[in-house]
Image (cartoon, rainbow, N blue to C red; front, side):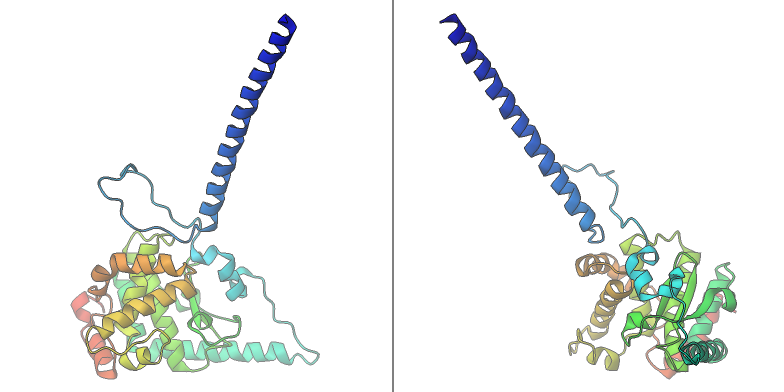
Length: 301
């Protein structure tokens, strides 16, 4: 009888041990699943401010992407020359290599013409110099061969690692389009010079994209023919700016649509009213001319 009691006790304690082990395994599995989902959605940054009743400490660090957009695989896939991964393969007669060289030469010519003739580009360069930063066209402007395409991400961009604006020579083949690419992306050089810029902070990126769209990109004609365009008599320009900024953030900075939308909404009012360094919304030749003539108001040479 005593032996039976001892066996019962052993079985009881063995059951308790098994239950505790199962609970610990479930807890570890739940913790690992949570960390995996967080790492997969690292670009989908939650920008909502915590309320005062939140249990989260107000000093809790903000979640930013681990790397800037220029360090992502998506950037390297879209602009392979930026990562040194592309060397155009020449055909039997060397025609392919010759074609790429011709495109680079044409692109460089268009860049030089924009530096001489494009008032908006000249305004941005004056602003960068007035902010105390030097800009060398040979160092800061480049013509690359990119993945073929006609969307905004195929035209060129800004490499924050090398602090360099680049034009996709194989996709941008006229002076007007070249000027637009340079103008939009010089904003990054200006903001980097003027502010303590964090290229991993979606809010900083959003403010730059808002000002780019506001000061030189959004026109009623452009907005009407976009997939996200909608005809409204009221606030049509601000809607254009907001949607273009979100579109650019997703296509050129590789944020998720949710993160891009939240970032734009959080800084829109302040950044939409900031007209520096152009001084006015340049939606036509007259406005562009006035912006250049009034550059002295910002202290630009």
